[in-house]
Amino acid sequence: MTNRNIEDMQRDVRFVYFREHHQRAPEVKRFKISCLSGCTLKGMYNNHMKDTNNNCNKSLLNDSKEKLIQAIKRIKHEIDECYEAERDTFVEALEVEDQFEALEREVRAEFRNLHRFLEEEEDQDLERLRREKERRMKVLKEREKKIAMQGRDLERAIETLNSKLREEDSPKLFREIKDLLKRCEVGFIPPAPVECEILSSRFVGPIQYRIWKHMKACLYPNISSLTFDPETAHPLLTVSPSGTSVWFEEKEEIPEPEEKEEIPEPEEKEETENTVEANPRRFHYYYCLMGREGFSTGRHYWEVEVGGKTAWRVGVARADVHRGEMKFCSTEDGLWTLSLKDGALQASTHPKATPVRCSLLPARLGVFLDCDKEEVSFYNAVTMTTIYAFSLGAVLVPLFPFYNPCDTDEGKNLAPLSIFRPSL
Image (cartoon, rainbow, N blue to C red; front, side, top):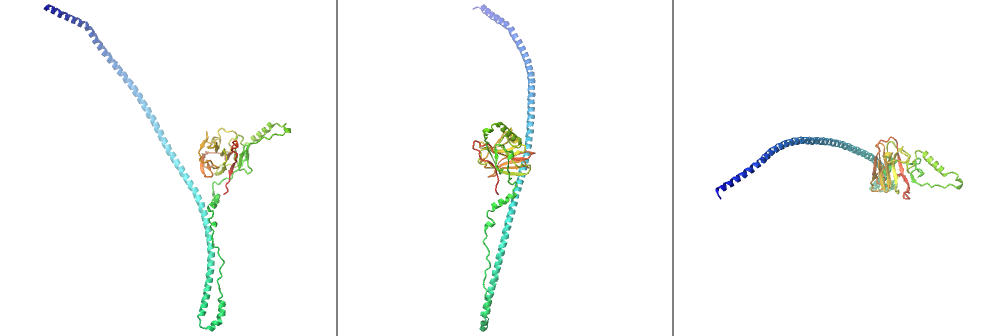
């Protein structure tokens, strides 16, 4: 290859490079311009976004702060309620403590009364024992004194005889012996015997039972001698002549003779209904009745035999309790009662009855009404364990004993409801 050819080839290569270089230059320039323009816009965009983000962050921060402020206010309110509840609980604790201290004083006072009664009974029994002891000792001392006097007389007689025996003048002794023997005719005459056996039954015996009987006079409240009020009894209830027993008895309709068929039977029923409705004190919907005596003050206790029954209801009722159908038959209606139903006890609380747990169903129910403390409580009268208690609240009318023997329960509930009267 000649030099000319080599130069031509070099020239062609430079031309191609020059051409390609100049053809790409505008694109590079445009690329640089585009990059510069893009960078500028991107910066502006970033600044805009930064401002926008700053505004959004401030708004979110303010919202978050507002939420925190509200949370703080809510927690402060909860703290106030907590402190108030703590203060109320502290006050309630003081009140409960005061109530228990008052109950303790009351219990101590009741036992002091019992102790005073027992001490008085003890003093009386000991005084009776002391007087009997003094009487017996006086009789025995007098007997002892009489025996001692006879003993001294006998000793003097012996001494007289011994002194005569020591005398040497026999003729003189012979002359005086007859008179001497006559004077010495003494002997021991036992005094009347004294009863020395002391029977403990006179001073001890069934001392506790005897004291228990004596205690009847100081019992408060004493067991009230109550009776049923037949004027309040439902027409299907029968009250015993003594007024202490009541039971449900289905009244059978007696057919009228044929000659009296002209008297319409419905009229008789209507007359009976009118007679029942004419007595506003009589219960005509539920099988209930009330006691004769109502109470407004003081403390009262009575017992009711409920053994052998499958259903009953016992308690107290307002004097103006509704005699017809009641909405709840509860404290809302003026009834504070305990009842047996389906083998379980329940209290007539409002708005629904409260089940009462009891390990042993009572055969005899004790009812204690304290009008001054506005309470009525129920006891197993055999064990004297508390079954349930109501707070009456302010009752401005007298309260009466309330009873419901319930129906016969298909022959299962035939036993009467009876007022128990203990024989102390």
